[in-house]
Amino acid sequence: MVELQSIGQSSTVRNYVDGDWRDASGTDELTSVNPATGEELATVPFSSADDVDEIVQIGTEAFEEWSARPVEERIQPLFELKQLLEEHQDELAELLVKDHGKTFAEASGELRRGIENVEVACGIPSMMQSGSLLNAAPDIDESAVRKPLGVFTAITPFNFPGMIPLWFLPYAVATGNSFILKPSEQNPLVAQRLFELVDEAGFPDGVLQLVNGGPDTVNALLDHEGVEGASFVGSTPIAKLVYERAAKNGKRAQAQGGAKNHIIVTETADLEFAAEKTVSSAFACGGERCLANDIALIEESVYEEFTDLVVEEAASQVVGYGLDDGTDIGALISPEHEQTVRNYIQTGIEEGAELLLDGRDVNVEGYEDGNFLAPTVFGDVTEDMVISQEEIFGPVLGLAAVSDVDEAIERMNGSQFGNAASLFTGSGADARKFRHEGDIGNLGVNVGTSAPMAFFHFGGWKDSFFGDLHAQGEDMIHFYTDKAVYIERWPDA
Image 1 (tube, one colour):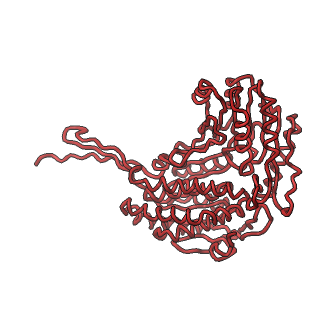
Image 2 (cartoon, helix red, strand yellow):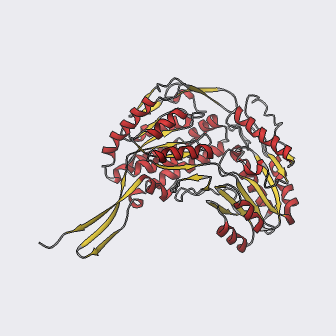
Image 3 (cartoon, helix red, strand yellow):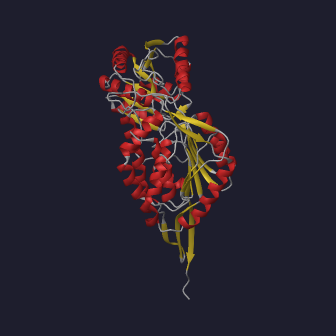
């Protein structure tokens, strides 16, 4: 078990500024709490606009020297960071469980995905290359190059405190920029430990910095003229506000929002396999993820059989503390969020959905102060119900019968969101139709959770994403650089 004293040597969360740990100067603060035990973990002081201004100025100064370094030099600390992350992966996973509430296996998988992004960013010497053309015009050669831009920031959410910062951080610095992370104020301890490893990895002072705080801190970053661009992951309403504010201030912006993802199950699918993957997708991480498929659309001919399989599989899930052996589903992030999910369940009942499995009365012995809900499954969920339209972000799954794949795709595409969807089928024709007609950014066939590997961008359409360059992969290179074209003539003397 990670001891909190290792986090900045204090039970107070601190900023990482210019290669050193400093106290935030704001007047507001929050208490970080273990969601499973109710134990207070740390005090989280919020940073002021003055704190942000100092950090941005330091990042600007660091950028001038860092961007001029050869690219091979810039990736050497990333190799070291990758090694450190792997050496400390179990320790980080334990801390992540305490900080967030998910299971140890889920935390380990999250960190593995983050490490993969560091690996991809180490290939930046090839990824930053652009085109050239000899004799583009008489005696003229032309070439295009990518140049870093300055200081970037990322505002990251509570649900993946280890992975999502690494969607951005490695690419930003590998391309030659400086970077400021603003983690969720609800659970910033993983970010604290990550920056201890950043410090050990040998990045120059000021290239990577950490600032803690709430909405005012975010606004100070978005309004600061020294920040070139901002990345955000969170709910759709906040994503839209962040994108609009950053764009209004002339910044590059990418904002990943919420989701309402669908699984389609056809009569040709392996139903047992599909049920297992549906339950995993809907309930893993307590449903607190934007890739959770929480609406399943099932062909009428297999609806009853598939429903029975799903309910049986969901009922077998063990709810408990994420560090205890045998736990399948951990705690939700806060009592307030737990109550929000309970309210959605009550709404579903009042709307007339059939409550097939009720997870509200779960009792986790020894953890009476934890924020726990067991899997809840609704049947006969109609398209107009609130629980069919809004992101619940909890362990709630809705099932509905459809006549065929065409009806399922039409219903899926009718959602305001477009983050992810999965199809379970044995038909290549159905799979092709799904891929061609699905208005969704991440599409999986016989895959429960459509999570792209680090060398592909993380898709998202409609109200699930604001911007045009996504997280991960090649999109990050485009986001963190701009192209310049060199047109050269050297006439014969």
